[in-house]
Image 1: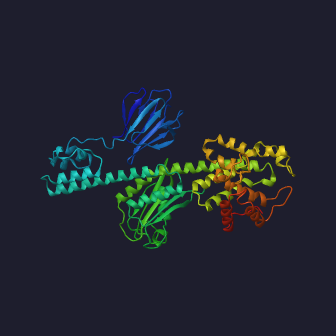
Image 2: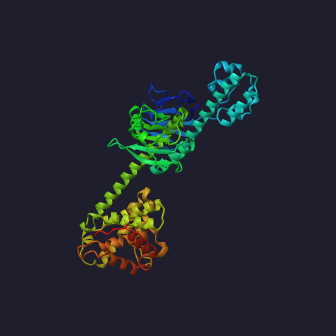
Image 3: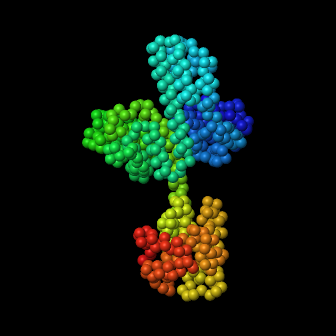
Length: 526
């Protein structure tokens, strides 16, 4: 059985069993009481459900830490160490530790009735050590074969077969949920997460169509996030029944329709029948008693394609996936906030001069389009985009009279102006999460012939992101209006880029720029 083993700290016991839902805290009303002043009165909850154990911080002062990382909610895995106050608890799943002492005990544990269990005379010694441990299907199959060798009636054999089949199914459920938890636990990109969820569902259930929808908290409407079809047998796209979704959300229940065409619960004019769905299952994605999404699958060909066991399987998958989806949603929200902050900062720099308003955003957008056209990975394209947004951040330390001077700068003024890439690099280098974008913004005024600044780098010594930003930055500067001149036409800017390709600019980047411009992916500030 799942339990916590005390590794460090003063506690009333050396181990605590985990069953159902329990709380941990300093107050005596908790299920596990930790008399430690670093522990809040009601610190953490632990829930064992569907083959998983989930730990959740309850707004404690010092937080709940799993394997060195402070968490809000986490699925525990065998061996995880939980720090609460100064107490360390090691989680032990207990999945493979329980040794059955007799056949009768094993039969009782797997749901076999007492009468049948009493008729079994099988000696536990007949089973190998692995088979004596309740925990894998192979062991259950060995038990099944051994039981069938016993001299018991056909009726008893039938009942035993049914009970063992239930045990096998239960183990399959546990294995699938474990696979879902492992496969989805580290995925933070929502689209990738949804696609992986549907892929796993299609591996274990006979679905022709699958669809995942999330609720928009502002409008309360559901929007399609991912779809999947098995082959193209009926050549119809994945679809969902609004009637079914509304029922699932209103009642917070999983729903199975074995034959949607004949199901009296559904209006014959609604989508579930008009779209030709036959067997359908729909389960909610629930967190903190709120339905925030649904998983909807159907078979377009067979009636009775799904059973209650299949519905239980899909429900358990949804329960495991809900935590991963919530984590990914929080990541998306945090990432959006991060980008909004960066854009606001870049915009504030641009607004010091009304003629450069929007310059950083355009350079970032152009740079990402060039990077994508050059075949860089999504991660590299985003890094280039960030460096483009922040490429002029160092101008925050340049005097306004230099930035706004309509004529040519004096030598000493130009030397001060040229310090902005290095200034920007120092600012951004202090942000650990953005250290990998520093080369792009620090080196965007370097030239491939080595005559640029601040370090006189040449050719491939210059970071790829910087070579890309140099082209995007120059194009936007040439085509934008300035106090002392009008912006030049795009075609004239092309000529300038070609003219300085190989001296100021990387020829490969110039070529990529011209290609993506021709595709309409770059539009100048007219």
